[in-house]
Length: 119
Image (tube, rainbow, N blue to C red; front, side, top):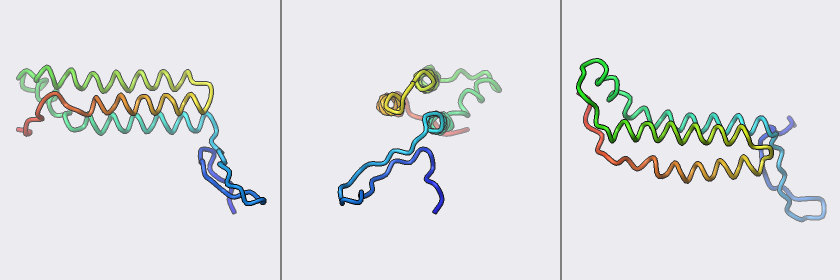
């Protein structure tokens, strides 16, 4: 049987029948995975409105300021999370940052505007 990946957490039964949680996560691997996940999440959100600043650049038609502000909020949230994750010194700190940023992210997914149709 191959060794578990360094970031897996799972429950197993000990020889005496008690259920124990095994945490095989390694700090740097877990940090890298969480940062990659947060960046991918931000990229998905930004992708829905990528065409708006491109259209502004190419045509000179001003973009809705709410769209640009929302995009900046997503980038700022991601940057704060990455900085906090890089400063974390334990798995518990990484988990706390990941959850707090996930909750903050819920706010950034609520767009304060209607995304117009691409034209």
